[in-house]
Length: 82
Image (cartoon, rainbow, N blue to C red; front, side):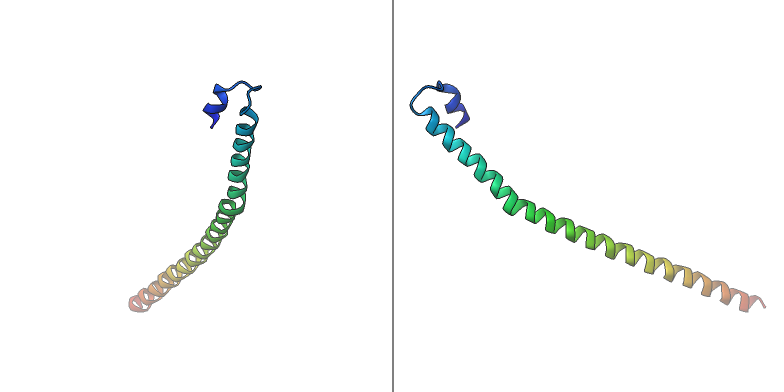
């Protein structure tokens, strides 16, 4: 459609109609992105934040388990050494 506009002079009969159709197509595309794609992106971002929170929590749990396991192992070594 842009190529068709480039081939026409601004004063030609169909220029205004083609320009209007192009404008409507662009506006429709923008609205579609705002209504659909941006909403999907927001949901994905929210899901990513939640996933990040869960991963951080799990990491902390595993670090506590490792620390506890090391402490228990050191205690057992001390008992056997005595």
